[in-house]
Amino acid sequence: MRSNGTWSGGRRRKGLLAGALVGVIGALTLTSVASAVPVSQSLFVQVLPAKGDKKVFRGATQHTIISTVYDNFATSQSPRQTVFTIPSAVKFVNGNIPACPLSAIQGKFTAAAQQACPQSITGGGKVEVNGGAIGGTVTFFSGGPNTIYVQTDIGPGATSLTIIGTLAGKRLTFNNIPNTPGLVLTTFDTTFNKRKSGKKTFYFMARCPNPKKVNATTETTTFYSGEVLSATAGQKCKQTKSKKKKK
Image (tube, rainbow, N blue to C red):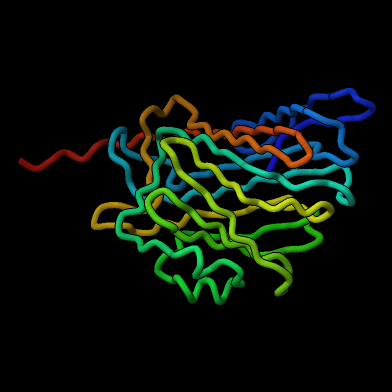
């Protein structure tokens, strides 16, 4: 998960990486010189359906792709934390979805983890390591009203990792990612499903407060090697007419 920039001989260069929908802007900040660094990051976010009521939130899906390019995988270091700032047009409603205990899935591979907490699954997708040299799977589990577990398998039975996400207001923070130099996560391609969480609620919900305004999602990633990268993706929506209440 990352952004845009390079470092060479103590000099920093800024760049622009075209990306998701209305665009992706990457910015790189360094605190130390590293022998291999992330040089670009892109973010794609798509909420479907892309239309909604002005005030009423309704069930939706969200497809997200976050990708990073490194100048060298041999000594590159992992991201330590990624923070997403989500727009007011979307929200998570855990509702009656049961919380999966962390102990039930940690250290397990996809099939065993999904079997342990089948009713807590809220989405998933795939992951790539070192630019696609190794692939894996991702499963989202609800860990409670403000907790998301990202169960990640790398390679065919090679290793598993449970990344913990914490939701606080409009900030979704993922941390506890271990540093594995030379073996870094370069692409997450995932979707939050349209999963019911109550009689009239869904785990992921969206609305269209202003059809002329871009609903922007921003992420900022901090790396073990000292870089701080950020990217933004935006999407416009189509506003539908509100249903009139029967008298």
